[in-house]
Length: 255
Ligand code: PGA
Image (cartoon, rainbow, N blue to C red):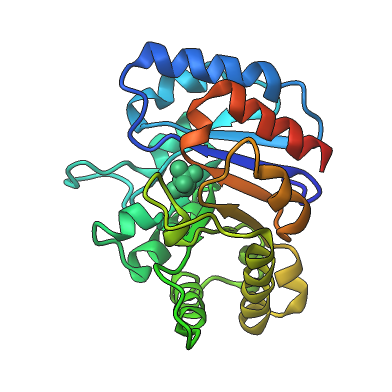
């Protein structure tokens, strides 16, 4: 995807409860998304809906995956193969989301998934983000470590195929401590780019897209798009409401 386009990703997590609701919401979002020229929309539903939603894709909007496994086939109960995603025409895959990390996913596992995505032509959206912000700024080391370990062994050539989503855990979900500020997002976007540049060189770092995620809603999206130093957003709860998510898409098109 050209970096000049905004990338807005909806992460539906374990919602909605029925396939018909999933289709209805996807179709309503498509009404808005398919008309946009400068914005690409990706909706990541539960795997069980992916095949049906992939039939509803149109220009500017397609379904993505919330996770992937690093093996192609075999005795891996509950896992999803990159080949299965490829067959459905999936382009984007969320990797290392904080909710998966809370269930035991490590940087090493995220790293294997990033490499798998690249190998099979899928674009990984690698999530990084601190759980807390401490006064000694240890959270910066935490993010640096996440980047270093999750991207270990990726070549300079391939780093531009990776999208990084900055998602501070304290700002995610309905129990969030508070919303992040656009300035905090801007600082972190610069910090992430600096770390990518340290590892892969400044030229390669320029080509990496950065998204922000954590309590994005129809009211605050434009602040992050205009002042957050990011190329797009990763939206949880608000992406299940077609009307509000549609407003976010329109704001992305304007920014
Ligand atoms: P939220 O989730 O928008 O509901 O805070 C964001 C995410 O977890 O990606």
